[in-house]
Image 1 (cartoon, rainbow, N blue to C red):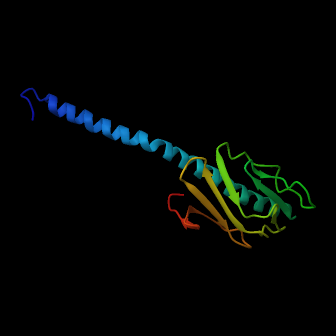
Image 2 (image 1 turned 180 degrees about the vertical axis):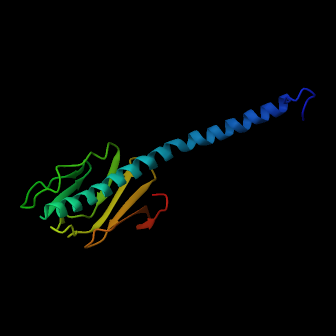
Length: 158
């Protein structure tokens, strides 16, 4: 209801404040989940970018190379005859759970083909968000998705 001077009455103003408070409350309750999802997405993208970086480095050198994936990110292989593709990547950060079925050393051929494929799972500790990366052989094509029910399902938000 409008008053003669064009303002709002007290009941309208209180209703608007109540609705605004409700919306703010809902936003704050979802903030930790949203933040965890963003952190996991960023870590997974870092893993994917470094995979591509290793392939390109093998092609550029014209020599086979290898990398090892750990919670600290991609690292040079500890032992063996295979040269590292690069010295190492930025760490994924703290609070992540990383699982993968790659071998100890992921190998890349001199022309950039991937000799080992597999799946990587990353989740934030305490979070319900689990992202996955599937890498196929021999081209090293990767697909990012959401891990659910034992499957890596495509996720358009990535």
